[in-house]
Image 1 (cartoon, rainbow, N blue to C red):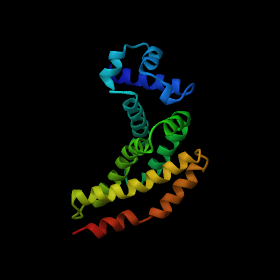
Image 2: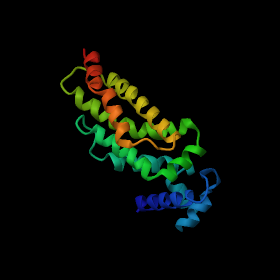
Image 3: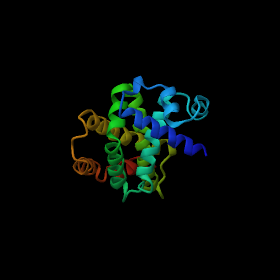
Image 4: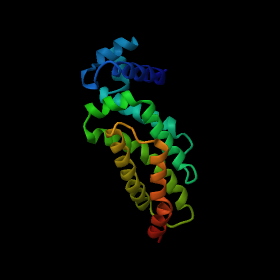
Length: 184
């Protein structure tokens, strides 16, 4: 039941974002639109930005599903970009209304899981500390998020497949090399 309520709140927020900016939407607007009480909202989220974060992470998680392996990470990254593009009105509105730091944090949560899965897979049988695995995943996470933020800032005009292709060429073999460099 609680996930149903969260999804209803997400749908209401996305509907409202088509009509007005995030910073003009109130919790009352959202709860009225979706037909629940303010208390029900606060049972699930501490504020609107908490709901926005949940929406971003939820959409990204759906996009990634089982694409966290070395052989499928480019497909997973493509699906994250496609999910962002599919929710362009929502993302652009959020991008304009929240701080860059908040937007980065939303995207960090999405991309970290993708990269951490790849790093974990490539570390099997190698003596790499958990701390070093996290460092490697964080390093690549920052690159992905930087590219994605620039793409969003430019209005999501660049072709997703071209962009992911460039990222793939840039990273080809580097995650494996990084892991080998950290292996004891």
